[in-house]
Each structure stands twice: as C-alpha cells, then as structure tokens.
Amino acid sequence: MPALRKQYHHASQTEVLFDAVEHRLSAACTTLRRLRMVNIFPSKRMSMCDLIFISGEVTQGYGYVATVGQPSRPSPAEISAMDQVLQWMLGAKLSLDHRRLLWLRAEGRGWRSIGNIVDLDHMTVKRRYTAALEDFIGYLVAEGQLV
Image (cartoon, rainbow, N blue to C red):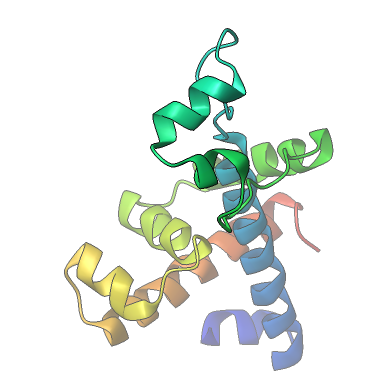
C-alpha cells in the first residue's frame, strides 16, 4: 500500500480504489457462480412425479420442506462486467499465485481458509494479497481502466 499512497495524495483515495476493485472481483465471482446453474429437471422428459420418486420423500417433492432456491441468472451487463474483470486479470500479467489469492478472496473465503489452501500463514496471505491487489490496481491505473 505504501507505493500507492505515494502516487495518490490521500489514503482515502487508495482505500476507495481497493474497495472498488475488490467489489468488482467479488461481483465477477458471483456472476460466474450464477452462470453454473443446473436445471431443476435433469432432462426435458422428466416430470414432477419423477422428481418426487427420485427424491425419496413426498414432502421434498411437493416442496413442504424448506429448501434454498437457486439464484437468478445474471444479466448480460453482469456477464460483460465479469468478462472485463477476467480480461483485466489475464492482461495484468500477475503471477498465478497472485491471481489465485485475488480470486479466492473474491469468493468470500476467510484469511485462514485461504492460508490452508495455499499452505501459508494467514498473516502472510494478507500481505501477499495486499501486494497482489496493489499490482493489479497499478496495472489498471496504467492502462487507464481505473481512474
């Protein structure tokens, strides 16, 4: 963060940039997750009766048991924004580790969870994430994508 603080006069501008980029990454991750929706019926020939017998319980088939609904499909604007973020990540020439840290954090994972995945201490993960985010924001500012 010190490198960006030299470039921008106020720390608040840096924090706003960090928050904006983190929000765009998170939105792209959410959009990608919503694109992977599966239809309720595995085939078009399947009916509600088939679903009842497959589920094992009549109450599940008729919806008497509380279940989590599927998220709505993303809009074309959200898909375009996701594509733009993915192009930024590939164009930034970040290392694979930095891209992985940025994406794992965008998924909403905690620092310790990311540390377990990449086999690092959570404080080291925070420092490397901050460095990766600085590099990413530096690329976006240099390219004129972020003002």
